[in-house]
Amino acid sequence: MAPTAARTYEIRVERHLGPAAAALFPGFDVRHEADGSSVLTGALPDQAALHGALALVRDLGLVLTEVRVVAGA
Image (tube, rainbow, N blue to C red):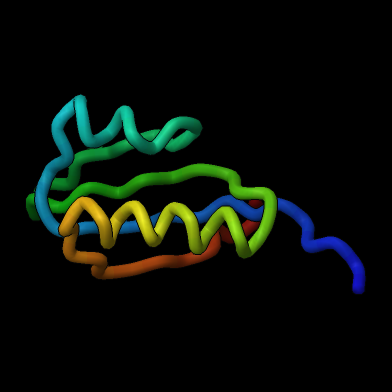
C-alpha cells in the first residue's frame, strides 16, 4: 500500500475557540469567522492524523460543521 501524501485541511466548528482550546490543535491556524464559527487550517500527514484531530473536536464537545481539503495545497 502506498503512503498517503500530506494534505491541508480546513475543519470548521461552531463558536469561536478561545486561546486554551486553540492551543490543543498545534500546527493549525485558527481563524474566527463573522458568523461565530472557527476554522482550523493545517497540514496533516495522513488519515490517522485527521481522525485524531476530529476525535479531539468530539472530545472537546465542539459541533463540527465542515471538513474539507484545501484546493491547491
